[in-house]
Length: 135
Image (cartoon, rainbow, N blue to C red; front, side, top):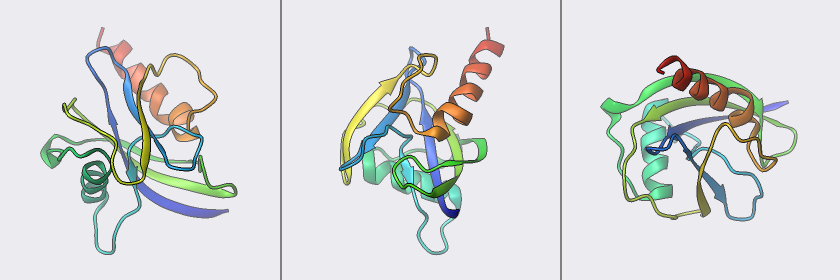
């Protein structure tokens, strides 16, 4: 399988819901993020993509590495996504921009069939475990 390298951001609101986006012409929700430009580090990619897609400049110092994960690409059949995922505290003012058609705050504890495998297999379980550990 061919690999697609991306960086993504998990952002939660005060209810624990995770911000997800759907790109124009696709059917699956995924974390905001995208592919690196030449010479860009994964955290730089995450910050740039979030600003381009949602209009909010994240503070790079507040990014926390969640991990690097491999999963089936949500919208590109036959590809594997290799994602470096960061968490960033809630930032107000997100809005649809660039190639994003839809944004939604998703409860990671509720299974859905329109969710990227990266979320359901890796990111959501880790976020939920961290929430449970903090209680």
